[in-house]
Length: 125
Image 1 (spheres, rainbow, N blue to C red):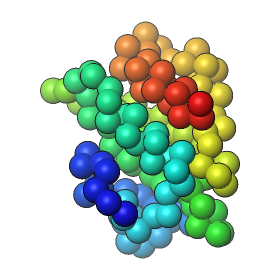
Image 2 (image 1 turned 135 degrees about the vertical axis):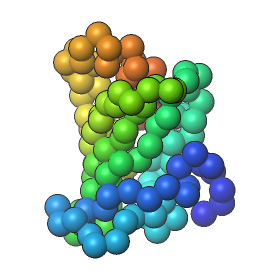
Image 3 (image 1 turned 30 degrees about the horizontal axis):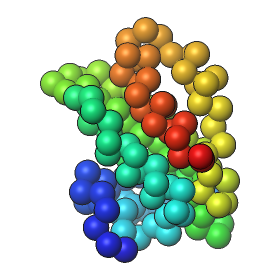
Image 4 (image 1 turned 90 degrees about the vertical axis):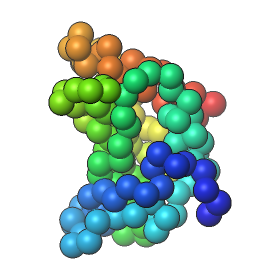
């Protein structure tokens, strides 16, 4: 895979295969990302907001398809975090109800996560 995501490619994350946590941390380059997921990462890089977006958890099914990604969002110079989870089908399309997720956020979380969810809304289009 060519270098596409300087913000994500060198990070390690918790890796689960068929809901079993793996002993070693996952690495971006070792995952078979679908085209839609690569599009998502590229769009997330375009967010113009002072926050750090980190891949926190990656869940694979038995066939090693990415079925869920947990992110950690942190505003610049803050210890506050939000942990949105995004579900995918086997083709890499987002299946999470993004509008429903936004409605459940408290005002502080909404301020941090709104751009994140807006960008996710562009992925399947």
